[in-house]
Every structure is written in structure tokens, then in C-alpha cells.
Amino acid sequence: MRIVILGPPGSGKGTQAKIISEMYGIPHINTGDLLREEVAKGTEVGRIAKPYMDQGKLVPDDVITRMLEERLSQEDCKGGFILDGYPRNLHQVDLLDEILKRLGVDLDCVLNILIDDEVVVRRLTTRRICSVCGAIYNLINKPPKKEGVCDICGGRLIQRDDDREEVIRRRLEVYKEQSEPVLERYRKRGLVRDIRGDVGLEALPEEIKRVLAGCK
Ligand code: AMP
Image 1 (tube, rainbow, N blue to C red):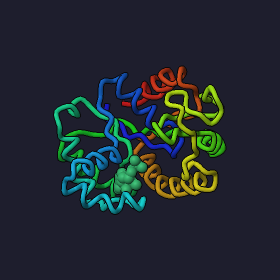
Image 2: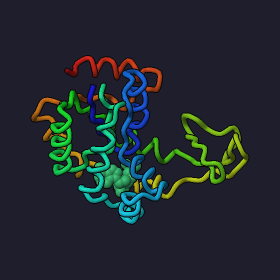
Image 3: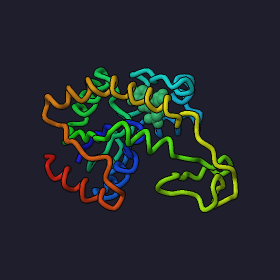
């Protein structure tokens, strides 16, 4: 299975990718995580990428694409992968095509997570983070035992700046602008499969199986 997963912030994309990775025994390749590793290791790619990442801008296509090709060429990707965070624009769609051609493989499907903006806004505005240990809570689904206090370390719970409603709505707009042309391109090729992003954690494996059964 060679899968690209697309979904807005707050859609549970990371969770879905993790479940798919475990269910099918394929690596979850997240370009944001790969870049953060490069930065942490202090590699040349990391040094080039950091200023862009710090400003929330896209890292130049040639830098990220070279890094991605190296990762997809590794042994553990031979049986497939789930790619998260790439492609983010039409040029990256072309670059991914070229990488896969060089590797002699094809994409099997592009998973598109469907979720209502209001569900995302509710999910993210009710998220709280411990200011000391970073534990994540949700006022509705996973509230702390004592209001405003971390169960684990007793630290104060805070709301991240980018979890404020106006910031979330802006991020959703940016995502739509970026992803629409990419989805359109893949739809024309018949690769896109829509998957629900609003099912609970228990129902998610079944939803994933149902949708992926239609791929290939
Ligand atoms: P993320 O964890 O997906 O939010 O990615 C963190 C940062 O890594 C982004 O803000 C970009 O600077 C960079 N990045 C991740 N994926 C890409 C990509 N496909 N193209 C360009 N930059 C990317």
C-alpha cells in the first residue's frame, strides 16, 4: 500500500496515519517530523530548513524533496508507506511522481479526511496543554480531574496561541487554498478516497478498513 493522506489541522490525520501504519505494517512518513529530526541533528538540510519552519513558511521544494526521496528509498518503504505532509502544492505532486517513477512504484490511493470546520474549531478551542510537562487535555473528551491543573504533574493548563478560534479559522482557510488543487489533480486520476474524520477512536479502524478496501 502506497498512500498519501490529506486532511486539515484538527482532523486527526496523525492518529489515522498511525493506525494505518500499524494495521498494514508500513512506515508513517511525516515530512514535518523528518525536517524536525534534521534540525535536531544539525544537518545541512536542518540548517537550511529551520528559518522557514520558524516562520511557518514552506521549506524550498528541492530541499524537502531530496530528503523525502532518501527516506522513501530506504528498505522499510519497499512494502509501502503512508505519506503525511507532502505534497502541499502542484509542483510537489509532480516531484512526488518523479520520485515514485525513479523507484519504479505507483501510488495506490490518496486518503482525503472529511471534517466539518465547526467540528475542528470545537476540537481545537477546547484543547488545553500542560505548561510544564506538555500533556494534552480536552475540556470535552478528556478533561483534567481538577480544572486548570495537570493530572500528571500539577502544572497549570494553558491554551496554545494557535488554538484560538480566529487562528484556527485562518489555518483552515490556508489548508483549503493549498489542498484543493492537489486534491483536484489526484481526483482526475481516480486516486482519491474520502474518509470520515468525525468518527470516534473506537470506530476508526473499521472506517479505515472500509475505505482502504476500495483502493487498488
Ligand atoms: P508540519 O509538522 O506538517 O506542520 O510541518 C512543519 C513545517 O515543516 C512546516 O511549517 C514547513 O515549514 C515544513 N514542511 C513540512 N512539510 C513540508 C512540505 N511538504 N513542503 C514544504 N515545507 C514543509
